Length: 307
Image (cartoon, rainbow, N blue to C red; front, side, top):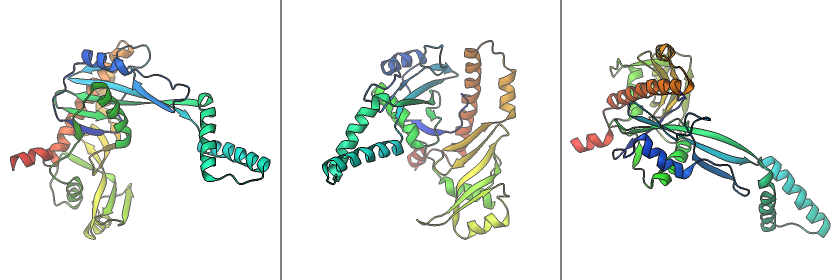
């Protein structure tokens, strides 16, 4: 349940649902298996997993949800090999060349035949809505993956006014200033990993791991015109992660202080354990997101409003 990646979105209007009413809405799109000729399906499943019927879980003003995507597995190499065999049989039997359009039609027929017999695999996408601070946070490594859940939620609710987190100051410029020491920032402890990029298109990329990022070598690349695109950070000895210049978070880890708090909390069963862990996680991430917004000059639209 502990999130490992963060795609952060801001709700443009207050969220109108509590856990109970949101459950009722999500019930209209419960996850199901693929039909005979369906390549993929997506729907809602209980965040607590099997044994639970509730499609939401609320704690501390936050609501956890989970989308399950099921898709058929048809390896391209297998399809290509079977298609080549069919094409070869036709060409040999009729002594002619199979043209491109006919080959595409044969491929469609082949996929139609294979679809009902293909194996399926499923994957889950977790997210939660912070109704107090108006955040929607998706545990996804890419915005494309997060958009699968957002699209499903938008279709289920009829509307979902959200946008990716945007801040007043360019994250790349601020993170670069942290490394060069031209900005004082005590909140964040810099780790040993970063990615530097030229500011021009098609420019060079430098990736550093297990290295002193405040040393002369990294500084030389920055002085040559590169900026920080990714930076490993530690948040108050409670979280470690890699922050990207689009404000997505990768390889998030909840450190010993948080894990000890979770372990010391009484949890008589799996549902209580989930509730404890979710409460701790959402509180830590609420603080983290607030810290990011503050460090990068506030929300972008708030600065425009002030101007």
